[in-house]
Length: 96
Image 1 (cartoon, rainbow, N blue to C red):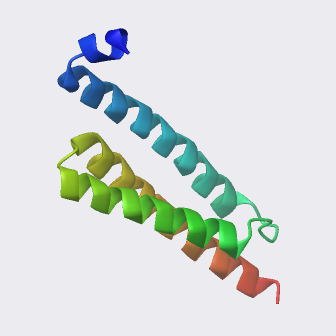
Image 2 (cartoon, helix red, strand yellow):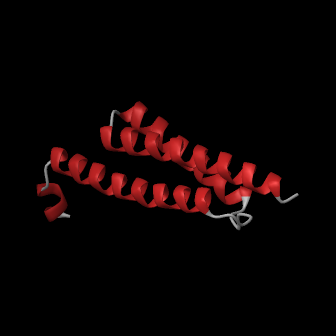
């Protein structure tokens, strides 16, 4: 643990922001793929709603404990997951 203790909180926050934004980029790619695909989505609603709730929780955690990396990245992820939910619901309605 000595190594981790030697890393400044500001560096951890910066690295957390970079890592979280990387995760958001991956989620954005999934949203774009779903939007462009003409086929019915294979994503389950449990998966989509579950991750929405997870991202929402971590957004509130970031607010509560004033961690910018968690607040920013999970706010973006919550928005992207909401978009994914809308895209999947609209696509699946076309196939029913």
